[in-house]
Length: 327
Image 1 (cartoon, rainbow, N blue to C red):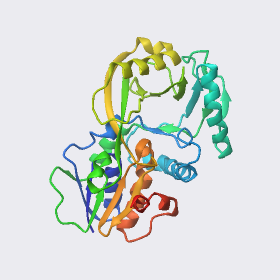
Image 2 (image 1 turned 90 degrees about the vertical axis):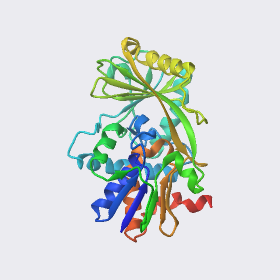
Image 3 (image 1 turned 45 degrees about the vertical axis):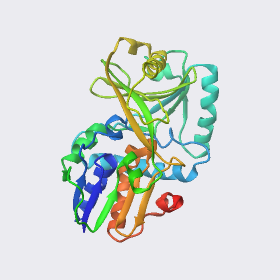
């Protein structure tokens, strides 16, 4: 089959690689490959950390997505920053901890391992005031390294789509041009530069401010991220201030790090904040609207779309997330 994939983010590139691996002739169409949400994403593979109340079908999907990542990362034959160390979920104040405790109980009820710890004993740089848990199953990967590796495996062009057998729309927020209910959700993310001893991803609340810290092997700490229903590309001083304050409240040593980058990205949100993956009409497939889960879901999304290209049905876990629910 001749397959055109519109969008060279991590989802589109993963689809192209998988379809090519199955013997199809694939071209990715994007004038600026890898420059969208994938470039800004922190890369947390967190089915537990992203497990919220009243979303059993999405939680089931995210758990399945996380299951394939170890072998998927190994399949690159190069370092893509996959790190299974785990995540600390913490709160700074008593109110923060009480707010997080309901989530921890929910996660335990789903069968996830949630281990109560003293955060500063696990990560000595974390303030002694913090309280929380360790979640071994929440890992991380470096999306920029994954995208770079994928770009070396597929054909990408800025040219318009020509004649094809199948077109796959994986254009993130740009997917709205196909009549899909995808909206931009703005996020500001920081990169700090400096040697640190942090091993775990850290996420939680600091004086009611949501925060996550993702340590990289290259002496970089990702700090994120704000969430606003806006489409502009400007990072406000207030957003940067709030992220830095929360980060240094949890890990005071970060105040000595260099502020290396301020990034603004737009998560592709949907009315139910779940992905839209499936057949829109014959010859036109969609894989978009992943919101906060694009990196985590990319490999499994690629397999599901490749199944459709092969003329097979998608796995049952994807059935609730087809485009038909919005049509």
